[in-house]
Amino acid sequence: MMVNIPIQTDSQKITVTLPTALLIRLREHVPARQRSRFILEALEERLALEEQNLALAETAGAWSEQNHPEMRSDEDIDRWLSELRRSWSRKEP
Image (cartoon, rainbow, N blue to C red; front, side, top):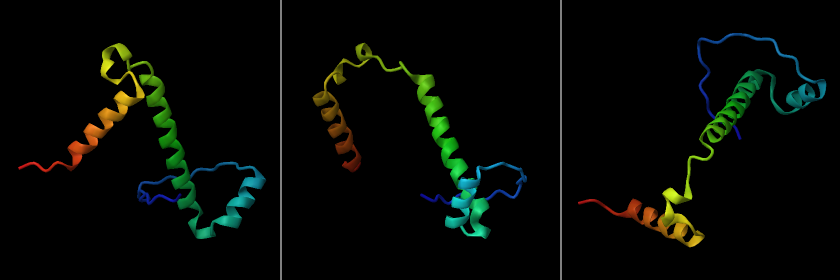
């Protein structure tokens, strides 16, 4: 999935070492003048996942069933979701 990420004007060049097989695949699939953008987008996507994983790890255990007895069963959660979704479609006067 390609994401449109604007390339910043304050860029820096770096040197990275890639396994030959990976470089061959990159060259096969991405035209020469599009590789920097492709790598940028791949890196942004991977960093976003890493940041999400970190946030999940940092907040693990924040939810407590005793603080939310109204959501103990699957049916309770389904009911809560239905009510929430209905509220999205209500028009305010």
